[in-house]
Structures are given as structure tokens and as C-alpha cells.
Length: 143
Image (cartoon, rainbow, N blue to C red):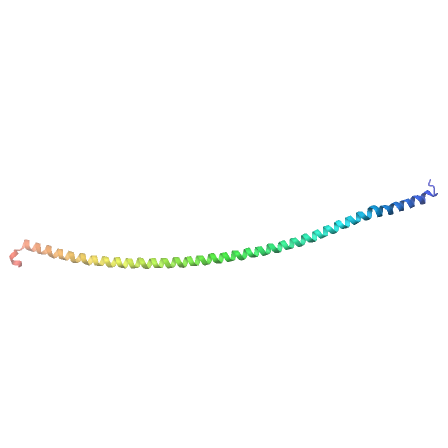
């Protein structure tokens, strides 16, 4: 069935030559391109990981700054509230003292008016008493 003459070794040599030629012309450049691409992807992956780590560190730094700013603003708010309470308390105390002083002044005025009214009333009572006595009794006896 098979002829083992010179065609078999010639076909084997042609196959080896074609394999060597394809290896030099096609496979080596293709493998070189694939290796370069793989290296580029590794470098990009490494660079992206570094950039991601740097971005995460920046985010953490900003979050820390935000937390510090919040803490500081809360302290400022608490201080302002404490100052407002102190001012309010002092104004309330001053107002209470003023009200107390006005109350004492009003009480004194009322007492003075009361005393004046009693004196006036006593004078009127004395005058009315004399008039009643004069009308009831003889005017000559009183003198």
C-alpha cells in the first residue's frame, strides 16, 4: 500500500522545514506580541493597584480631616451653647433683680400712699366728727 521510496523522507523534510519556517516567521513574533501584551497588562494591573491604594489613603486622610472638622464644630457649638446659657442666666438674674427693685419701690410707694390716705382719712374723720358734734350739741358748749 505505501511506497517507501524517496517521497516519504522528502515529505518529512518538507514538514520539518515548514515547521521551522512557520516557527521563525509566525509563531515567534506572535509569542513575542502575546508576551508583551501580558507584560503590559501586568504593569497596568500593578499601576492600577498602586493608584487604588493611593486613592484609598487619600480617602482615609480626608475622612480623618472631616471627622476632626466635625469634632471641632461640635466643640464650637457646645461652647456657644454654654456662653448663650451664661448670658441668658445673667440677663435673667439682672431682670429678676430689676423686678425685685421695682417691686420694693412699688411697695414703698403703696405704703406711703396708704399712710397719706390714712392721714387724710383721719383728718376727714376729725372734721366730720366736729361737724356732727356741732350739729348735735350746742355750739357754745364746745368752745
